[in-house]
Length: 92
Image (cartoon, rainbow, N blue to C red):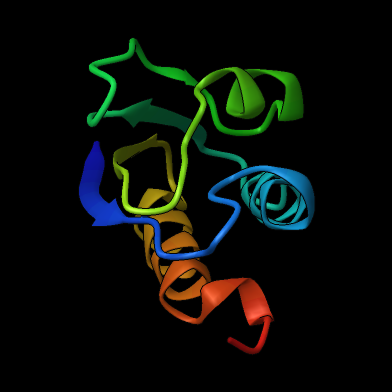
């Protein structure tokens, strides 16, 4: 299992376009990927489900924990971390 914590800096958090981009990226991996909103002390949710990710209510400035388990777990965490660090490919 691989995990990391990271802060979301996008103005809308993991809602709207960033949320969809995040879920689409997570879904490319075979590993089980979970997300927990540490700021809200939420339980882990399926990072490949847009409904679950939206329900996690991740807003700008919130810290999340990503956990991946499977043969491509490290690649999944690395890719999702880079996506977040690159502000979901959006300018600003």
